[in-house]
Length: 242
Picture 1 (spheres, rainbow, N blue to C red):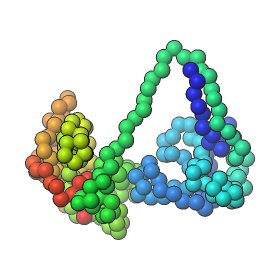
Picture 2 (cartoon, rainbow, N blue to C red):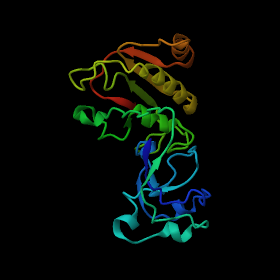
Picture 3 (cartoon, rainbow, N blue to C red):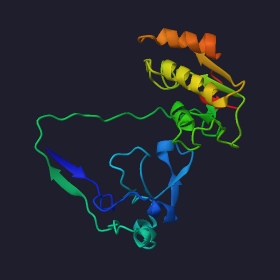
Picture 4 (cartoon, rainbow, N blue to C red):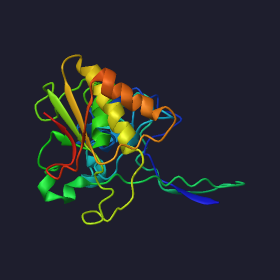
């Protein structure tokens, strides 16, 4: 099997992941792993738990690759690990089988003008909200609004975004995961808030079809205090924080 290996422009044998290169890099770009909620540098580690923990240069945003100057990372790297001369490599591997893991793309609600996802910073997708809640996320796990960094008083979860809707997105199927991760995020949000946070999930049908999923749903409703409202809210889409 032949595969194409793209250059990292960092020698993996020399890189000690000290982070000095990223600290000195002057170029900031949107951090896609954190949903664009914060910035990262052009030389970066994709996420904190990356294995192997080695840095890479994003040639699409790097000042040196775009303008032919800078090379700050090379200057400050204590391990002499920066190598701007790296090229693509074609590797031939002898394998008995191949596992295809192409992944997927999250639905982009910004295509709907009336829902204002792209206009209001406090309307976020579930993936973005997951990063907000994460200890390694843009706010170190603190539950705050992206717009002003203040703690929210209410959070609304709007379900079936991008699915079960052939008129707006041509996806008639149910994703089968949204109900449970919305419940999980609502429960964790209330735990993080530590106060009287009002969390409401607006849903079409509550599909808790896995082992003990119904028990988790009932606990969220009866013990944690998450509100559930059966509806199809057309006024907004995503997770609204205010």
